[in-house]
Structures are given as structure tokens and as C-alpha cells.
Amino acid sequence: MGADLEITGALLVTPEGERRGTLVVEDGRIAGIAERPSGRARRTIDADGLVALPGMVDSHVHFMEPGPTEREDFAHGSAAAAAAGVTCVAEHTHGWPVTTADELRDKAAHLAGRSVVDFALGAHASPDTLGAAGELRAAGAAFVKAFTCTTHGIEGLDSARQLALLRAAARAGIRVLAHCEDEAMTAAAERELRGALRDDFGVLPLWRSPEAELVAAAATTLLARITGARVTIAHASQPEVVELVERERAGGARLDVETCPQYLLLDEAEVVRHGPTRKFTPPARPAPAADGLWALLESGAIDLLSSDHAPSTLAQKHEGDIWECPFGLPGVDTTFPLMLDAVVRGRLSLGRLVTVYSANPAAALGLAGRKGALAPGADADVVLVDLDGRRTLADDQVLSKAGWTPYAGRELRGAVVTTLLRGVTVAEHGAPVAGPGTGVHVAP
Image 1 (tube, rainbow, N blue to C red):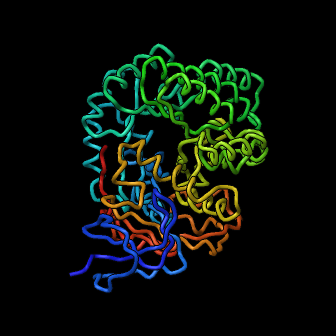
Image 2 (image 1 turned 180 degrees about the horizontal axis):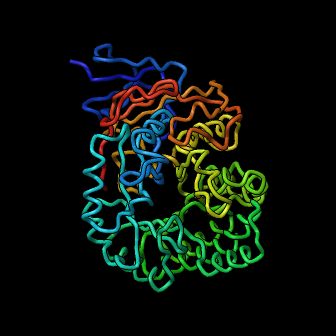
Image 3 (image 1 turned 180 degrees about the vertical axis):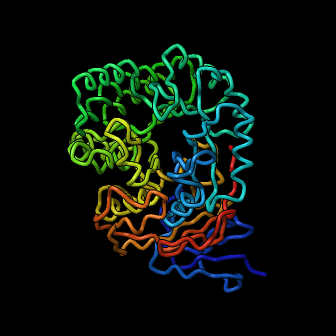
């Protein structure tokens, strides 16, 4: 009797490099790579002319569930992920923040049967639950999110509280995902700008300044070294943040640094021009910052790429003034297509894309060996791509509840053809073909 599935004809991107072969799948896992098809598989996918990659792992998304789901829910967000080549996400919602082990278990139970792709879950640190890291890890949390300034209604942690959190996290062996903007500096800038009656779009880069990000990142990376905690610096917007990480890593700190497409492809001028639909924090920086981040992404200094998918509808984005409209961009629909385009255009190597958007995120979530590689024993999460494909991004292609993208009108090279989750086809040619319940909760 043959294997459950054989994927034939594709160029396979494996941990050892690129090679031709037949990917053999049994019981939802990769059984091996054969030199040629057996002809006995129950199902065969002819992938001649395509490239087979491990499914992408987006380690930073907000699907807003449970809680208010006007902006997003798991059905829409996970379908968008599948269509875009993402087979696993790590989710934490600010609308219903998880701060205790009981809340995490309740959330996992609520989400059973609601996701198209597999998902890990993060928790939030609050001043009242700094010591809960061990209980959260035992309950299956992949990380604890910490804010250094109050954002999205989540209270920020000063350095004393952050030190307590990182000590607890180090003891528990759980990762901390740190949003770095200094509370005193952002609050002072807001007071000054509001006092001057500023409500133009130019307040965004002044309110959430480069200096505020650097001060918080400097404190967080230092505390990571002091405590020995494993810390990811979230959504670095400027090369100087990466330099701080590298300095403390050289001293023994267990640090990773993440960036997102909005810091590689948007800039401060666009933020000031568009306002609400470019309001995210930290904001995009002046144009030279992106060039530096691209170089650091390719060099290996940046460890992780994520979408930081935090959608709102256009109507929600234009409610109130620039101070009151919500932060965040939709991104899970577009992150992999945008980065695949960068590969085809020669700005990023295919190997680095797989490393930062699949292998490294899987390892950071405690899922190495199961996710993030076309290797024997791993889940058969596979994305087949056509490097000769072409598409133009448009709002009506967005499957997220947001229904729009800041990248509309961009012509992209490369295309996602098929996405498989544990050997099951979940999307084809930009459309989901599997429903909620195909994906399951995966804990570290």
C-alpha cells in the first residue's frame, strides 16, 4: 500500500537546501523525500514548475476572538492566512486579554472548531499577574506579551514591573514578546501635541517617536540580559533597535528581534499623507530606515518576520480624529505575497524568507520539529508557489474582515498556488477550500 500523498515535480526548500524530489506524506506528517514518485500513493499532486516551501508561521496576529469581533474573527483571519500560504499563527487579542491560566484554557476551548489553520496562543502581562508566567506556560501559552507603554487599552509596565515579569518568565521558561515604546516619552509627547491643538496626521511620528522606541528597547534588552529571560523585541521599526539587540546578545542575552512588512515597505511620508490607514505603532520611519532593515533581514541580524495583523475596517479607521481611530493594519493576507515578491525581485533570498517567516517563528513558539521545515516527522504543512506568477493587490481580494490593504495597487511577482495543512488542501489559487475546524490549537 502506498503513502497517503505524494507531491511530485516541485523544487523542495528543505533545511539542507534546495533539491528536487517527491515529498511523501503519511498520517499528516512528512514521511520523507523520495528520488521519484512511487506511483502507489492514494493521492498525488503534480507540482511541476512550482516551488514547495514549509507552510509559513505567523507568530504575531490579532484575530480579536473571544471578545468584540467587529474588526476580525478566527473564521475570516484564519481563512486569509491559509489563502496566503500561512499554516500556523500565534494569536493574542487585546480586546479580551488573557492574563491567567484559566482564561487561556477558556480561550482555547472557545476557539475549538473555529480556525482553518493551526494556532498557538499568547497571553498578556498585567501589573497584577506578573508572577503567573509558570501557570500560563503549563496551560499552553506560547509567550507572554508585555507592553512598555499603555496601548490598545493594555496597561504598560515600567522597568520595575518588567524586571519582575522577566525574572518570573526566566524561571518558568516562557518567552516574553515585548512592545517597546517608553511610556513617559509617549505621554509627554501626547500632552504637548494635544496642548498645541494638533490633530493633523503629522502627530503620529512625533507622538510615537523613534527615541521612545529606542529608550524602551534599550531597557528591555538590558533587563533580558540581567534576568536571562528569553525575549523577542516586537516589530522593530528602525535599524537602531536591531543594533541594541545585537549589543546585548553579544553579552549573553537570549534575544530575538522581529520586524514586519510595514517597516520594510511603508515610510513616514506615507503615514503623514494617509493618517488613519497608516496608523500603527511604532509607526513607519523615514525612508532610509527601511533600506537598513532589508539589509539586516537578509544578513540574519533580524530573526523573525510577522504580519502583526491588527485589522480595522475602513469605516472604523475613519471614526473620530487621528488620536481616537484605532491602531493597526491588516497584514496576514499580504505578508507572504509581499515577501515572495521581494524574493523574485532579488531583495531577499528564498532561504532567508523561509527562515524568518517559518523556521525561526516555529522555534520561537516551541514548535520546532513539528512546524517550519520540510523534514521527516514534521507536520505536512506545505505551500506551493509559482515564482513566475503575477498579481495586482486589490481591496476586494482581502479575506480579512478589514476588507482593505495599504498595499492595494502594488503589482506582485510570484503567487501562492496551493496551501496544505497536515496534508489537507486548505487553499488553492488565493481562495480557502477548507472550513473552520481544520486547524487545531498547538501548544509548545
